[in-house]
Length: 451
Ligand SMILES: C[S@@+](CC[C@H](N)C(=O)[O-])C[C@H]1O[C@@H](n2cnc3c(N)ncnc32)[C@H](O)[C@@H]1O
Image 1 (cartoon, protein in one colour):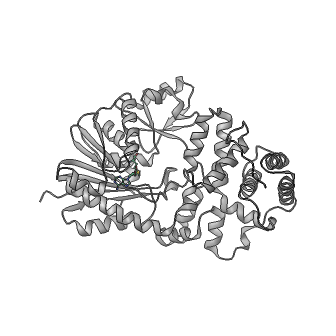
Image 2 (cartoon, rainbow, N blue to C red):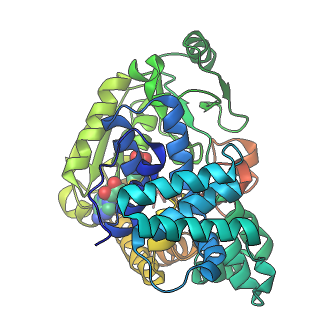
Image 3 (cartoon, rainbow, N blue to C red):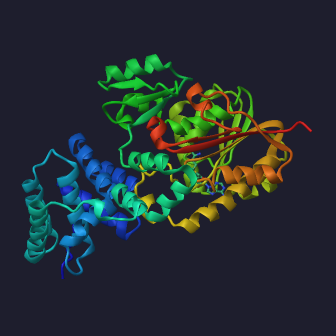
């Protein structure tokens, strides 16, 4: 028997990283959620928090690369946790320089003793010391260039092939590399409460260093500190949101007094953004398939001091049956998608997503859009957005939608910074992670013809 019950947090960051990695693999836990839960539950201090995040994400991000390096050193079958311990150790040896290699080996051997027994500790010790002596093999031995790129950037080969077919080798390579770079925390300033300059000053007074983005004016980049722990956050001056995620609400451009439908609204990042753009005047119906997620929208609205948002559990595929026809001035369909634009944040997506999932999503996305059209007023605006980089869910969904809806027309992207508008084509904008260091995101804008 090599298994011992180990608590997720025993005060040791590497033990905790290993426990999280194992849970992500074995129980299909989401790495970002489990990491946050662990940090909050055990009130882990800032220094340990940063290291735990780096070790967990870093190891997961580089899984395939680490496996390629480890393979020649592993003989026979090893337990899953031992495999993750080796990946975690090798990640530190290859990608982090803050801990000397021999210290990494010693610490890993101690973990192996705690979790298993002396025999496993000696196996781990032997493998890691052999790697230290011999070094890891070069990826140049991989003759197939696509396979090599997949191993070097740790992405599945089918996905790399798919990206290359759609976007070319250069763009794909940049994107795959960017996916392994940890994102900078970003927030949106609640303009109904304070200006960007006022919020920057508040943060400075709290000892947090932040700067205004050069792209989206309401976006701040956090250079130090954690947004959710600031007073500015608790008092409703900021919302944690990726910069690309700020595009859809701006592109919809809702005005004061409008009646807006946010069809896939939870957890409410874009609903509350729209309410802020509307200066909290008008009404927004925020619907989502999952009723339990709607509480998050209500909580965020209260925190931000917004009171024009009403929530309802509605399957968007039935929206036209349940809501009044042609009753909304604008509709946002921020659709469920494969999330291939957010792999920096959710590395597990790289390893769990299957190619067949992508076609299923295209069908759901079309159903949502078909319903959106029916409840949209003539002359009303519709925005379709996803956090993915995948033509089938983005451009192809848009063309299939337009082909069956002569009453809808594509309109040029507006109300976004010039750098973004310049990248758009025929009312569609695909942002790649490497473009501005934000999530991969897609936005398309439409209008319902007057008649
Ligand atoms: C990309 S997320 C939305 C993020 C949200 N707009 C925000 O900015 O915070 C997609 C959402 O669609 C919801 N969803 C999935 N299928 C749906 C359906 N058939 N009808 C309505 N919502 C659905 C999911 O529960 C999920 O919350």
